[in-house]
Image (tube, rainbow, N blue to C red; front, side, top):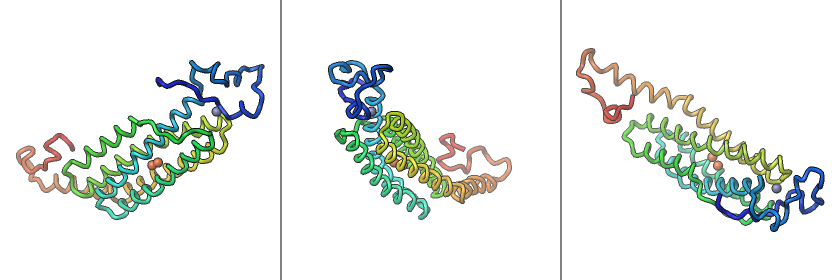
Length: 224
Ligand code: ZN
Ligand code: FE
Ligand code: FE
């Protein structure tokens, strides 16, 4: 973490006197909680991480849309890009609801997922295979976001941050819907199209042909 945990949890401490029986909300001043982070600090950290992840994704979604051949797939990435801009605004509202400055913190996880997606886009695949790979890359990102929002919603609820929980749940629902849409496109023809292309190629090879003779570059690098 490496950052001073100076946030004073506003959820209950500021309006209700801290309970003395459980001690749960005792440590609410800067003086007493200068050293030890709380779930609230972890929550703000995760929010900043997710805010940054969404910002990185707006750039990545533009690339995914451009690389798509299937018009429905391109449309899916473009409409999720619009949604993502709305999600960023919602996250800003979450920060505001918590009296926190709107601030991102570099998300290494999504950066890695985006890097992998870029590598796939540099490969030489037929159009349908590339579309299947773009879906795979997009779904990795969606699942990462779903995991992040799932945690954020649960933590917000546990701490009584109702407004934040509501907004985060809306983002989570959109991620789930985007993921489903991509599954629908993959299973609704793109995967089968790519699979047919892969296997018609094999069938064209005469039995006993020299191994690898008629294979394309993607195969040479060990892919099946
Ligand atoms: Zn709190
Ligand atoms: Fe998102
Ligand atoms: Fe998303």
